[in-house]
Length: 169
Image 1 (cartoon, helix red, strand yellow):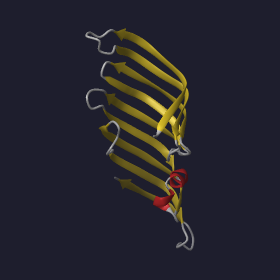
Image 2: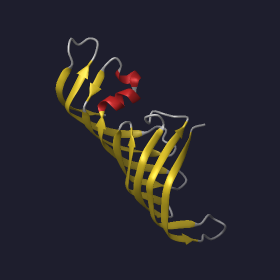
Image 3: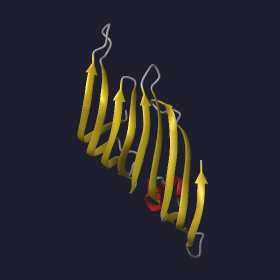
Image 4: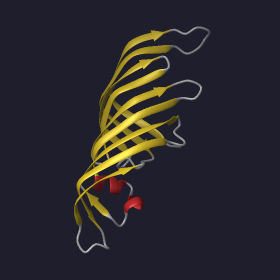
């Protein structure tokens, strides 16, 4: 069974609200995460299974966590996440993920998708994802804008350079 371990400094400033009829209590307030690392067990595609240097803030209420800003390093790039997780009978989420991503690191994380090609350079990546928890299936709209990238491969006599373009999913 996959699991996650989070290590870092977390601060929650808020109010615990007792619930009636033996229901769990509710929490309302602000949360901050500093200098954290999130590790996947077993390691997954997240660049060896971890996200490092996680820092962020969120607002918490009885049925929703609003992620105002969460940033961390994974797959050789800095990633930013904002959005919400809603509890209830069917917990759900909607998030915006963005990065100035390193194409070589992304390609190394997903070798079956790109081999034998070797992309290099930056890409502006933005994805909006939503769904129920656990995310099965995950619904995402994504866009990557590549500027001045290079693509090498065995079928090319020399690498293609100065590649610009967009990919949408």
